[in-house]
Image 1 (tube, rainbow, N blue to C red):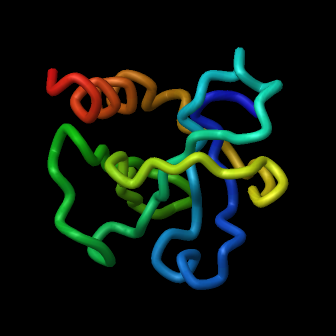
Image 2 (cartoon, rainbow, N blue to C red):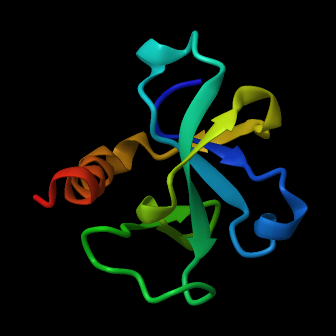
Length: 104
């Protein structure tokens, strides 16, 4: 799995509002049993996004919000399959992480 890969959300309850997860952990750490992910929720179906903290991305014909503040470490065995990548959104995603962790 690579950083910024998009995975299906296998949790039936949260998948209703967040159909995908994005891997935010760098792939240099692929030997770890867990991966840091954030949910991607459909625009308009969750809280109002904050511009820099919650980038809005296009994926699979939908506008999705990256809920950066909801990071979680998830066991790799509980993750769904890789369905794409948001590598093209790298700058916005790194900026959101910088804001979350450093305030910059």
